[in-house]
Amino acid sequence: MDFSFSMEQEILRNTVRQFAEKEIKSVAREMDEREEFSYETMQKMGELGLFGMFVSETYGGQAMDYISYIIATEEIARVDQSHAATIAAGNSLGIGPLYYFGSEEQKRAHLPGLCSGESLWGFGLTEPNAGSDAGNTQTAAVLDGDEWVINGSKIFITNAATKITSGVTALCRTGTRQDGRPELSCILIERGTPGFDAVEMHGKMMWRGSNTSQLYFDDCRVPKENLLGPRGHGFYQMMQTLDGGRLSIGAMGLGGAQGCFEMALKYSHERVQFGKAISNFQVNAFKLADMALEIECARLILYKACWLRDNNKPFTKEAAMAKLYCSEVMYRCANHSVQLHGGYGLMKEYDVERFYRDQKLLEIGEGTSEVQRLVISRLIGAA
Image (cartoon, rainbow, N blue to C red; front, side):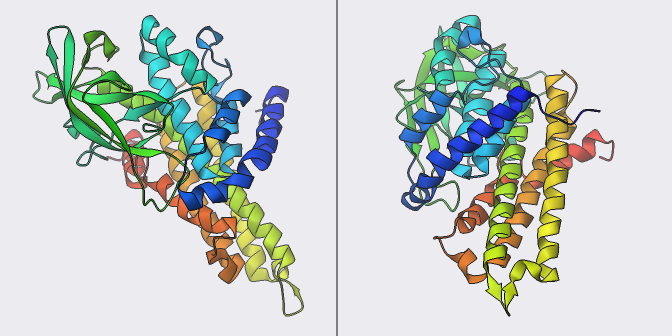
């Protein structure tokens, strides 16, 4: 067994880490405080090649493996979760469905701009009454001649309301199957289409520098050719997309946990109480040891799942495990790190406060921890 990364992957890790330290760390706190999306760092991430990393060069991608993409996401998340969310959603949820399920015409129309970072694309799945129960999608699309007429709404959609967003993929109810269950299909809706509106959401606890929106469809008409893949394949496409997306969330959890650990270790060496650095007290040293242990375990399970994906082996169970474990490891590391910082860990001038808030979405987005346990239990034959 070989647990080492290739030379190219190590170079990528170092390059992205240096970029994150130089370009993102200096603005992350301000973007969080002002609840603003940074178009400047978005452009720089695009220039660095952080979008379309696993897409072939034919469509403007970087033609890298999925592990390389996860490495980049982990390194961005080590510094800031909001920027990592832009990368993760931009690749897994925005680019992924178009790349894997789109027609040649759809790919050539949308992927080059998305892979360069010049534009973003949203993945409209969650609805006010359809979160974990995504099959209960109420947004409806009715075929009227050569057009789909779409009515409904989506909520908590990342990257869908920026000024460079070029469109969204929306999961819609397009009919009823023979077994009585809803027929679900994915449809592409471009920005500026009459009847389509994307509204930015504010007042978030976490990922305040990431764009989150609500989508509204009011007799929105798009050509029937905007159907993504075969009609009725929407649920399958959604599940395939979420498998890859869960690896992205796992990378955000791993990177965030690493960032929390490094902040805690540094502070515990600097903070002196009772005449010595607090890292010398066993109760604190054990916290740091536990963090290091769990981060190592998280890294192993995440990269095993990515290896399975890159080698075209089943990885649904491992993706759910990686997403679940890495997100909860970040929770424990953020909690320990705040505790080690004491009162300063509760102040915005210390980045660990932002990491503590940002972590929570990892246990909710792209399938809650409870849903991951449900998926795992089914795949191991327990339910």
